[in-house]
Image (cartoon, rainbow, N blue to C red):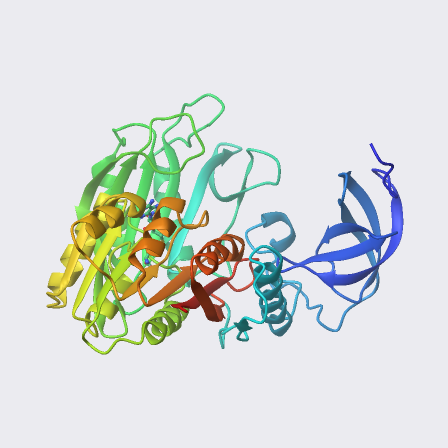
Length: 455
Ligand code: SAH
């Protein structure tokens, strides 16, 4: 193997030439890049080399010798232990610029797309307390229940009382549920032995309706003292409209199991985006940042440029959020989604809003859409909003066969977006513009909407 210019555990004085979208400083030693979490562009620092790969390495920030004007004091007291946020040391303005640059770089490097218009990232006016959903693992420390986050590289759970990107209602609800379960001696799940009961607590809060759902994820189907626990939760959290138990008996770090049952109240809570009302059940995907979701969907709708005559497909439709916005402006909308509970919500949501020109189907987008195409469905506009791994190739092939005039691609991962855009471009499409939206301030994530048209 070629000799690297630095060795593990070496102490170095470096200058960060760049910063990555997830808040690592990039230093170069004889052209060899070293990534250092919490470093910022323009800074001089002492680092310790922690890992050496063939073409790049990693380091730990030991001391900042000269700080960037973009460096800010992280407001969260547990920022450096938690790992949930990566950018609290970076001014918000700096974060948005770094995310814009990341999108542009990735489109060029992975997608080989040149001269695509990438707009400045649409950020939040107040980028704190934005999340509507909290999901925390439960553990035990000195005989008491703790909930929060995993310590880096361990199974130990560190207790968290407040999370500054979380709505206060979620913080409070988690503390209350934990205290009640503690009083009834509910044990925490232990992954090493697959023993104990309570694995995770999830809470979701509808910002517009002030409805709250509490989900207790347990290993066992029985929850001891269930009646009293439920009664106390209802009495202590006035916003609660639904208490749900999900059962996950498996020895795994996957959060949810197959079975979900309602312990009290409704199986859904409601929330509005714009003037459309949505029912959301425990297992359904629902965007976590409601303010930015509205901006994201408005952009997707603008790119769809509907006149009322179009047939539209919404692939990876979840509970039909984008589908219903589209349906108000299109002739007909077809939505497809893999989670049956989400499609049940989608149908309920169409009904709730009196929207009749929409059809939803459970299944894989890459199987259902080719089938629709065979049956004669021809979309004028196709919207995709896949998970991080991007679109399945079979779906991209079908798009190239069906040739909708416009594709609107909503993406939570610029790398797979770039890969998929390349495939569409090679098949006769052109990417006109990309609008990044900051759905996850203080984290390294960035969401994008891209407009792609047939040439
Ligand atoms: N457009 C929706 C959901 C986007 S999240 C919204 O904005 O709320 C991506 C969704 O894709 C999730 O609901 C997930 O369950 C679904 N999904 C994942 N793989 C899929 C596949 N192969 N086919 C269809 N849906 C899939």
